[in-house]
Length: 474
Image (tube, rainbow, N blue to C red; front, side, top):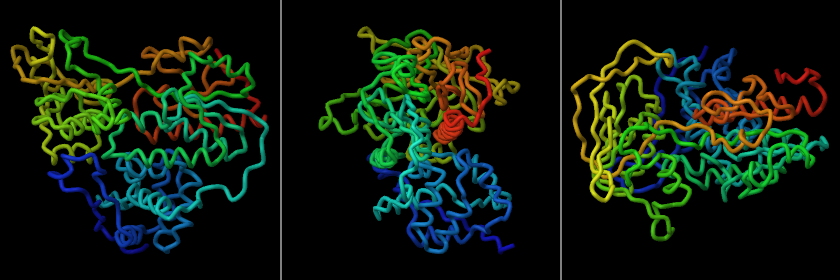
């Protein structure tokens, strides 16, 4: 076995004071020398444990070896043979809990920076206008048509894989641009929109047709798609319906859902007002309720839009916080305040119905709940008030009911998620598959991609008549 090099190459980043005032990408990417050094750290384990941690089965040691050998077109080819969105994954995938957590060097707390190398390869391809990720020749047409509803990470992945398999694919996107949550939910400083659109263009280059401003459930139902000649439908519409706390004052002016706030900032480019005519009230004292990546994104956007004080209010401790450690650290470096073991009781408004304060409880942690995290418990008599003029509620999302309410035979769970087999994506409705947040609720980009990939493989088997299993609609 090669000698272990535990000197993991850090990611170059903008200075915290500078980046807190702009929407440019925070992480600057590896230089060729840095990528080469990091690739050389990989000991090329014969058992390839990192691959077992990847939801889309990327051949990780192979693409890293190609970087080490200086063969970048080969690195692109290997990477994109399994992952159609590497520029996105290299930026927002939580590799630290997936492929990097199973890396042999993780035992020494120095796993290979797989995500950073993935980003390096994707950025190299874009800068050098390579097409090594595209098939050398079009696949043999399979003669089948598949409708993909939603062009987020699950839909794009399913569309790319099915197009590579020779199927005729049409992507239906409700918004005026493709990308789903990648466009409206993740800020420019974490995921530049030109990166998303480059990945969308790659999927289109494989032969997938894209139809924008197409709200399935309105212009056509799922059954109407099937009746019009599509042989299969994949639902990848995500979870775009915000959850609230249902406490007094939540309807006050100045209280946003994170969905609305981030959509205005990211998709509608409120951060470039008045160049883009999308106003958004930011205020001077902003509170963000929640502890996930969406809460971090909302807080960091508010800071960049000019808020003097931004506070993340989270009812558990730092140890239970679901956000990526990297994102929490970036927020702290930029001056975001973390008010932990705190939970709102009510929002306080003025005579004009604008929020001016938030009464909160102090919390303590009890025994673990169903999530495995310690349950937050109110400390009676601990109420106190925080002065705020904007509140952003980032407590998670559920699927929009439009698809389920217009699709007969589609089974849903308690929170509106679609019931589908984990291994295949098959729903209870024949010829309909689903994957990503519409099935799991709000989760990660890479888990949605993994679901899209599994569904595409099963759709292909079904359409080719290779799977004679009777559809389970019981």
